[in-house]
Image (cartoon, rainbow, N blue to C red):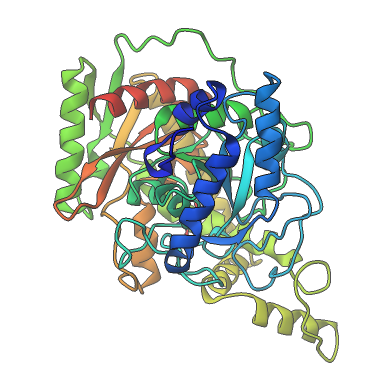
Length: 472
Ligand code: GLN
């Protein structure tokens, strides 16, 4: 048996080694658990290590011995704390659901159990997926494994830090406005947000239902594709789920045009990020792809639209957490007092801010001025992407306007919200998007660039991302 260095291993390679009998799933899981024991105290990425992980690994080894399973059989994975696994706690990073136990499996979990992937644990996250730095978790911040004075990004920071620190080989996160891609970029990993509906949302704690998507976080594009191929698929029990087109055997990238929305890149981006981005564009040019400057004037308003529609949906989705139907209860003098006390004790500051914002934009007097207006702009943005994809095959931007920042650096919520300026448009338009690592700063901090593709062109998105990854 070979010794296992999880940090330098990926899913593709580990899967091959498992099939060839060079390693076992048990040994893989043991290596992950060792890394967790050594470093999770410092990073706070994993909230709970599942006690049955080694038993599951044994079962996976038996599957492999019988010649069953697929590329994820025996592969150790970690899940954001908003994805349901029967019998396991799921808190959404919040105190209000501290001891809540999932009573069913999420669709993606059903799929992964069938594959025989090994579930290592539940990953820390910003409270109810609201945040860009993992500082809003009720269970304390997650640290960036590459530099512990910096944030790992959010809200899937625990999932991302777990992959980067060798606690697992792949993770699932959720992306409502960038929460997979932004932290992946901050930690030098690949993060993918599928086409809206391409992966079922059944069994995820909803943040903003019209924007949320579950997606993979991995070291390589190929690994992300391996997970995506297994977790995607139509689900009768999610009304917004769709069947994506079958993977063509050969995806041609001949004659591809890549659009750069220069009007987004004029301000608010660090100079070194821009330099790195321009270098990636040059590489694509040298590979023979045509680079075209484009304008996306409506998409510039994505963040404004997001901060109206998202809080509206958040305030609605979180209304069920009242201490009666769901969530920890703090007894009051009457039912309203109980609601008030339970919610005040259970929710953190950022969650409250968004509930208040959401209730405001949905209130009788302002509904038309804000909520309805934002939907109109959203439709204009969707149409704008639809039109631009008649002219170019992909849109490329930096994933984030800066590298991973220090803890406490963005105390002003508006500053924090701006870290999602490039990732939010894909959620607004429902299109797939993937962040690829694109090098390191002088201080050794990772950069990332993000491709956006037309609706349902997820497979093509993987193909172009692979091209860049191989040539970066
Ligand atoms: N950082 C964004 C927010 O705070 C996005 C969150 C997400 O994608 N879940 O809302």
